Length: 327
Image 1 (cartoon, rainbow, N blue to C red):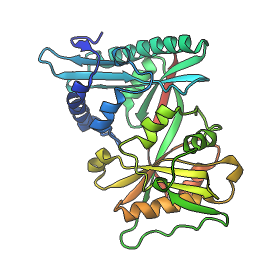
Image 2 (image 1 turned 180 degrees about the vertical axis):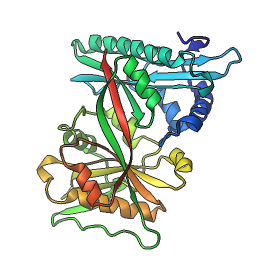
Image 3 (image 1 turned 90 degrees about the horizontal axis):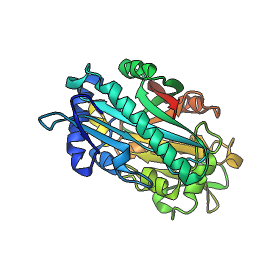
Image 4 (image 1 turned 90 degrees about the vertical axis):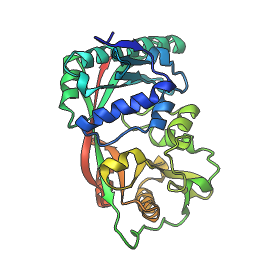
């Protein structure tokens, strides 16, 4: 399967070696973001996830982990199946065809999982395997091009520095609205709000209750006290989720808050609520000792989000490319 390596599925016991492999790769690849060991462990579980079919670990004769790969699928995907593949090869093991073989494994695993999901759904729904990479990774670009992947979308990472000393100002909500932290709300209706807000965004599909827990409120990096809701009366109509990806901080040289999602329900747009949320998040992040707030945005976002963030003081720092091919 992977030339020169003994392969088997990844398990929780592999997480320390997996993290060490990613650390060796990071010294060469200079990633802007890093998964934490806890996130690696959590990635091996989840609704509908089969680690035997959806992961691979390749070890050399000495037992050192030299390559690892994982294919995922969110169970909320019904109209179109997205199967992100994430793989890493030890820099000392590159140039031997391992990357090509790992990507080929990812395509086979994605195709098999898509076929199984189609049977579960009773529908011949379309599916694609996806590879996300930072824009400076020319090696990934070449590898994907040779395998028939096409660029689907570009995303920008933007950052707003937070001043030392007094905190940034935040606009007040318009009459009839109030801003509260996530942890002062009982959580009812928030997943539904998210799904409604992003229904008209490119590539978005509903999050199941399990995925809402896994990726948002149950994520160990989620900060409910930093996250904010806008209420109209007692009804949530806009929100901003905030995370602390502490594994990124050593490479950055400072601590930052990461804005996960920001959305306003369609019938409440045009009233400045997004700017209110951005201001409230920046103020709370400053109070928590963060030096900046970071976010990712679709470069072709039709809602004008890039302009909104620029007006709030965010500047582009790097980008991510989504490549995909049908399976």
